[in-house]
Amino acid sequence: MSPTSTSRLLLAAAAILLAAGPALALGRRTPADVAAALPVRSDLASSSSLAPLEPSGSSLLFGAWYDRPNGDTPLAINSRLQLNLSIFQTDIDLSGAVKPLTGPNITTQFLTHLEDTGTDAVAYLTVYPLAGWGNVTDEQISDLISRVTAIIDTGRSIFIRYAPEMNGNWFAYGMDPANFKSHWQSVYTSMKSALGTNSTKVAFVWSPNSGQGYPWPGGIAQPNVTANPSDQSRINIMDTNGNGVLDAGDDPYQPFYPGDDYVDWIYHYGSAWPWHDNVVPSDGEFESFLTGTYLGDTGKFPYYNMFSGSGCNVSTGNKPFIVSETGATYHYAWAPGADYGDLTLNTTVPRLPIKQAWWRQFLDPTFLSTYSRIKAICTFEFLKAEELTMRDFTSLGAPPNGFAEDNTVAAGFAADIASGQYGSNIVWASAMDSDSSAPAKQTVTTTATNGTKSLTASAASIRPAPLGLLVTSAAALAFLTTAFVMSVLESL
Image 1 (tube, rainbow, N blue to C red):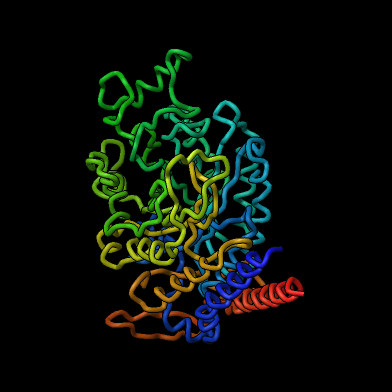
Image 2: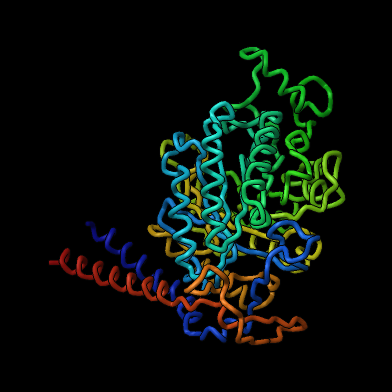
């Protein structure tokens, strides 16, 4: 190892210690201290007027699609934040063949991860039929229903996001509205029927891709009448402006909607994804995704209003709205093999201002009051290659082998929540009784006043989790010691 490499190790270790500092300060608070500032989740969908899993009033569920493949876990995230998130999401490939590492059998690990938190966090399962509609079998759907039933039998509720981004052309099942709606309705009906009285514990989330850039040229599912004359039938359904071709004037959403009777929630994502620049998101950027005005779009297809507002031709609207994956992109390297030409990548820009500007938009009380049907938000906690760059989407801290600076970001998020200025209506997961699958009784209640808002929470609802932070600190100390010893050896 070169002296330069050793110096980098020393600097990285020091950064980990500095990042852990604010989080460790949070860890010194008692459960009662934390509980005094946080509301606790009440029963979901307790009113018959609510959709399955919909929290009452202005309450907001908050969670993460965690980086399971890179070793992150729900417990690790809760520990980093000293908060109990109310949703955790993972994904499966229904076929188990296209992406074997995310086959249906990972639901066993997913359930273990949820149980490790000691809370009643809601499960969120994204289901990709990656082999295409022609390869979806009755046996696969039966197996899916069995796995969902096993999760519900532990006392949990679950969101199902089936065949997401079906209006895109990058998945084999994409841009095929007739087959999508037929399969969706069949899976919805079969699962609800099989669950019987537990059917209210599962909510189906309809999840088209954001319409910006529709219909996106190219892609494995792009209709090609020259090669496949039968593709004309798909184009006819998607050609909503009736000009005979699939173009930017066509509605990216309505042709794919299964109908209000088959949809419990609607989904959208909002992510600050500049092509390769590390820039602070502009004010109102998140909102522009909802209004259909992102990147200068005309707002002709205002997604939120169409399905959660006043409605459209295929929906009466007012559906509860979940943001299933969101985050501000940080580009930390060029992707392997990327042809970036004369482009430059500025990695000296700090992560925190970029990511903080994003979550402050969607957790702003005025924004949430304006878009009151937003009832749940999940951040996208991944490090991955996309297009030209390696991208860090995280908001809640680094997974194993991640970046020390991401723990500074996590500390910034926790501080914003603790301030009461952002996300004050978030309901956090409750502790589970260790002897049963039911949530623990809330017996000790502490009330605190934050400005004009009174927040009530139970001390039992906050799971003390300083261990993960202590492990982070201990690992940094060990890392620092190792680097120091290596430095000394190199000088001999």
